[in-house]
Image (cartoon, rainbow over all chains, first blue to last red):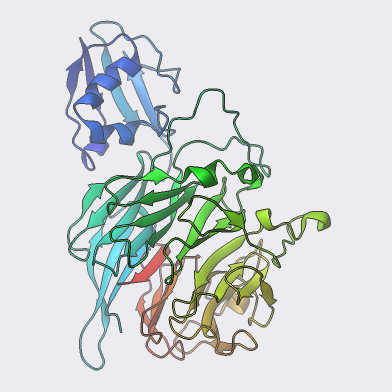
Length: 89
Length: 373
């Protein structure tokens, strides 16, 4: 299982409690989270399913590299954090 | 006259109400989405619903709906671009060379459908997609015909990175007849509710292009396009290179060179029943973009653009650097009451077609859009 935690700033707009899900890639992991929280999907992913430009996802402390297809591997037991990138104002 | 005004800003949406009776004053009745960009708001006069586009810096654009005149809000569906088909080649902005994304970048235009189309909405976006809802924004579909139009590949961003649809005019005589303004993509018209389209910007000219492409219709930059509800054949445009008017339903356009004190600006409004009456908010063009001589003024014509009055009573005339964006000027259904907002967070109203103005606030966030309910 993988533990997924969302930035608290997202909670203001859409409820996103921490979730324990399964999946071998970050795309599979997020898909499982959003399958039971459809509204949250659009806050994290863009229209084509890629990671939004100003969002960042960490797997065990490292930012994912494939922001388009979300193919980065996620080992069992990993900690995933969905955060805002430091940008904007 | 309308006593309710929505002001959409860089940091939230404000509902302004005017107290009843003589000497009534405008005040801020409610603030929503504080800290978040609200590029567009639409009070739908057909059923009292209000729609607000919200742009989260990190989390993307969202769409909200109010069924009680703006008191409470619920998130509803946001226009989304369909999956990009395999094998479709990316198109690039001809001006910047950057790839035009298949993603919603900004909601930039919003209009109610016709009186005979309950719940229908049109939504213009960056990077150039037009969307339609038939269920009060519970769902949206991309108007595929315009998105697939080969000439779209020649559109480019003006002040923005990508081209965008900012003005949508639904003909009150025929809801299937819709005219849209695109920066920079000219004026496009459908007569079959979006099945087919034709560019109709003949007569506009673009000084930002080389001479051989100056009159090309598909690259014009109409900053704002409005249509007279009582005389829909008459349309007014504030273009990057001046003011234009059509009296034949956008079949042809002619320049209005009499706007004072300058012909550059973003916003234009037309009187609801007298097509000869229109208002502009002029500024110095291109790299400067401040009011002429630091004086905020509104230019009004009452003779179809033959001449303009420069209206300044009640507006700041000393070191004022307020700029008015394309959606930040509105006139109510009476044709007497106007409002406009500025990048400096000022909002002014007038009850006499602009002869005199009253300040509602001097310190709101930068104003993107004002709309009377």
